[in-house]
Length: 88
Figure: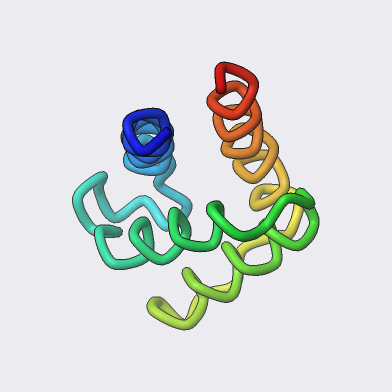
């Protein structure tokens, strides 16, 4: 079980590293990525996850992200989560 969660987290991190909502470079979001991955472990609804993603990134950068962009990444993250859980 723990190995599956580690793999899920690695895939989520890779996806989030590619997502650059403020065009500041892939390595600029390490703290935000860690926070989002932690939220992914406890949230199962795309809207809830999208809102938390927006809050996390906005808190750090004081810039607004449209909820639609956060929803897109939330769906991709939840797909990774559910794929990992279906293997169990």
